[in-house]
Length: 319
Image (cartoon, helix red, strand yellow):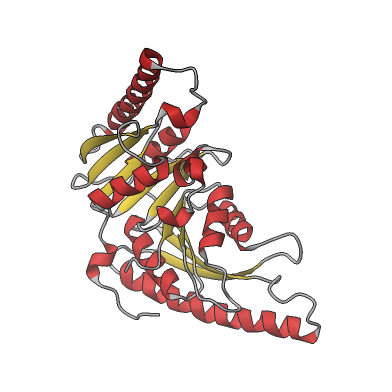
């Protein structure tokens, strides 16, 4: 793990894109985002008006009926943008909006959102999620596009039932790491959201189910993972100390083991986040391959589906 950090990696995000609709999930995302903003931030609010032809069978819909449906969807998307801008008004950031009309552009919701991201190139993407629907509406759409389609940018996922303290900055952050380049990138990017005098906890998860039924080698393998984890969290804590040397962070570490049965790394991370009362979890979307391959896209996607704590996903390609 690198022993020194570029000063720019610890600076706040400058360009933030938040995708919204009219659901409570977007309201939760905006509440959380507001506490992170600085006066020099530029925030673009994007809403997608879907094509009514892709939502319901329209065999009998023609002419004015179809146009009325399109207009209603455009109106709803426009209102979502205005509501989001009102929710962020007064925070000092520069706000603008973008309405994407899928009746005029080809493709589905996910690809339209990804195109908007590519065009504007934000430093951070913010999405709200209801585990049953809302996030998957953004990241999968009607064609089940892979999560990685959006994860070319650091992406902040905010659960709908999370209620932040809007009068306080993010001061308890859990970093999940495996020592890979992807986790180092996640740690450096996540550090930008950590407030001065915050508490940081770095965890390494020992997956006890990686080598079940191997007899005497099972404990040997677990002990080996534990030793690796202790080294990884120590290096990660050193990296955080460098990144937060002017911010007086308290940094602690832990090596955590999954339960013997019916458990996995995503559940262990979420359980630890809830137990420690984290305000944010930071996770890389690609980790090392081989026996300790747990920080992978599939794990990140499962973490998205179950997380009860705001989650920052950072792709390995982000330096």
